[in-house]
Image (cartoon, rainbow, N blue to C red; front, side, top):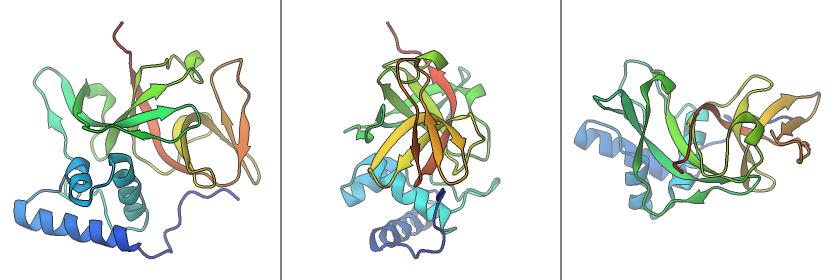
Amino acid sequence: MYKKSNVDKPASKRQAEILDFISNFRQKKGYAPSLLEIGRNFHISIPTVHQHVFYLRQKNLLTNEKGKRRSIQTFNFLKNGFIEIPLMGLIAAGGPIEAIRDPRPIQVPRNMISSGHNYYALKVAGVSMIEDGIFDGDIVVVREQSTVDDGEKAVVYLPDKDAVTLKRIYREKKRIKLVPANKNMKPWYETNVEIQGKVAGVIRKEN
């Protein structure tokens, strides 16, 4: 059965601790902590922080209401038409996200970002999406969301495999078809899928 999220489950102990940290941080400083600050406080990786924050939003314990400073992420708008977002990890073709030890903000064109949403970046490792113009070493800009339309490119978490992959998504009756953009690779099917974001843009690697 297709599974987007489970909002009925209570927050885990770690998620409750993160929620408390965010609340205390915001009260003291007037703004939300970054993913990096949360990770450093709990000695966990940025992708792990993202996973917890994602679930907290699904459970309506964190929100991202437009016009309110309740988002976990704040943008640094630059004068040169770019915005800084966090580069959170390395996404492989069908493998887990590999944490970047010292993640740093990267600059992305402002036209890739729309207000009222959270964004992050992932570095691509592999050639499964080359026919969509996403090559090994490129950076994908991802808008955090829990669903996409059929045929759209999405960052997908597979709980049964504890893996994250970047593929096009197609819904069938009781399963999800994950389709690579490479004629030499075959699509496959999953029944337990959690969508974590939609690809909003691609930044070509420097040669």
